[in-house]
Length: 294
Ligand SMILES: Cc1ncc(C[n+]2csc(CCOP(=O)(O)OP(=O)(O)O)c2C)c(N)n1
Image (cartoon, rainbow, N blue to C red):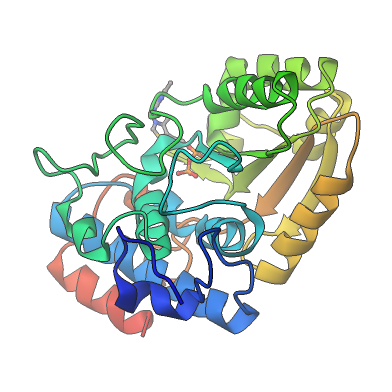
């Protein structure tokens, strides 16, 4: 068994890294265990930093677990590998989740996670592709990732490469006009090597989307923009894996997976609580959360 040079062997051993190309053999039980570790990392990292975005990181844990531990073709020892599938985090404030996932895969040591948001750390509050191994797009200004992903997908088509592109959007982010311009373009150009995933937790920075700017009827909007729509329970790894498999079969149009999730999922006092959108847990809350995540 070979573990990527940059990784922490203890944290990656359960993920069964057999070869240079990241293992696709993680079992459902291993992925559930990984998801719980990711949640613990998110709590620990944001708690230590005293700032950050735990709510929208916790809601997308299973989405990233399914992608990074089963679906994506990627190589943690070579983040720029030309043939890699591309994962683009458009909702860049969920950086703690992406960093935790990349560390668990072995892109950099798990110990580095506690440097979140420190001066000179590679792990800043929002993603920066120039400093963090495995990060594909610098993000934080919402609304841009789908456009970026279409460009990456079209480049792959022009270069006759068979990689696939996955873009994770927030549902509140879909209040941004640029998302719909991108949605039109992806359908027009029949970008079928791209799948968008919406972390549909119903909330954004100020509360419920339906009160801030209602997106309903959300699936129908995507459909009428020319997308294949798949709806799943975004906390069910089997449902997510099934959706990613179905998306690969879709030809001639892009696919959106609307993943129904709960903001703050896994920590009782954070669930559906917009107070934890952009506020870190304090020391007492960290202890309580970690107990719930044992
Ligand atoms: C262009 C832009 N406008 C405003 C913000 C401030 N902001 C940060 S997160 C957020 C809410 C995003 O909601 P959603 O996409 O649903 O994220 P989630 O609930 O999944 O964390 C807002 C408005 C921003 N980052 N970028």
